[in-house]
Image (tube, rainbow, N blue to C red; front, side, top):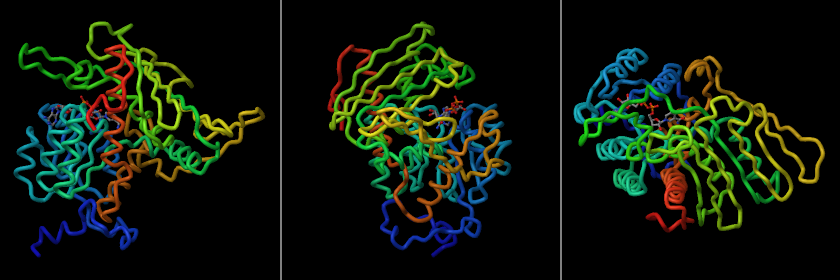
Length: 390
Ligand SMILES: NC(=O)c1ccc[n+]([C@@H]2O[C@H](COP(=O)([O-])OP(=O)(O)OC[C@H]3O[C@@H](n4cnc5c(N)ncnc54)[C@H](O)[C@@H]3O)[C@@H](O)[C@H]2O)c1
């Protein structure tokens, strides 16, 4: 075994049946996992701030065509070599253990497939892709290469959300019967990367175009939809949605959506996104699970459970064991324990071969829910699950 093979031998392939033999590894005594980050904009800077606190990872290469963004990323990853073209990085480097894809969403599939085809495991930011066909190409590339593909739905790891999932699965509110959620926020970051249309030469914020963003719900709201779908644990059969542009009238992607998803077991999931509510206070992010025996919501970092027949709430405390210093300031002034925890989950899958906490199929299900909602709001029709490819 040559040094390189030996160096990488601890990173077992996805799908390998080593789970039974796997024991918890002491990350501190293992060699760091060498990462290449492709796409070095705002979200990558948050990843890099967190990675600086995780000695089990070492960022050794960065790729981005925008010099200012690449420079800022490089300042957060001392020693990493920079590339303006990710293809050069993948062709040139033989010392990478895994790739993190943080490009604008329409490029996730292209970059992820290239990395997997090169034999490298991938952590790909959400949304997995902007089309079901692209998601299928990624799943196939992971299958063919036998390499891990982890989709970055880190919000499942928000401590209170993970607790809600655990309590719902344990039947704390009986059988789930109705679910509601929303995301009321401000507009997309005006500093986002600009996509230049090759036909017209016009550069537009990638979050304003359907081709590059896919759908407003794909860009945000998909986190909550994925988390709620994870808790409902059933199959969506039909999707209907309404939406449009009431404030940001000049852009292709919508600024508000109200969507309803119907499940095989009769559950309905109702979800709303609004991009012109920057200061929505406690109503900004709601998740409500209504079951046969109670109603569950997150409240100030705890889970509140109320009986359907009245009475006071019972509160379940949530433990967050993420070191506060590790994620302070990772995104503005906010804590981001979930992205920290996501890297621990990614590391665990890499080192043990255990299936990822969020599978490529989970990623595809979430984008299919959203793309059906997008299709419904554009056509004013109710969509069936089979109206998009399997
Ligand atoms: N999980 C989360 O909570 C979360 C939060 C924000 C963004 N995201 C996702 O992260 C991704 C990036 O978002 P962002 O906020 O960083 O956007 P951004 O516009 O700030 O940065 C995107 C970067 O990608 C670069 N890029 C463009 N084409 C590229 C190419 N061919 N190769 C390499 N890099 C390329 C741009 O130059 C830019 O630096 C999106 O998919 C977004 O949905 C996830």
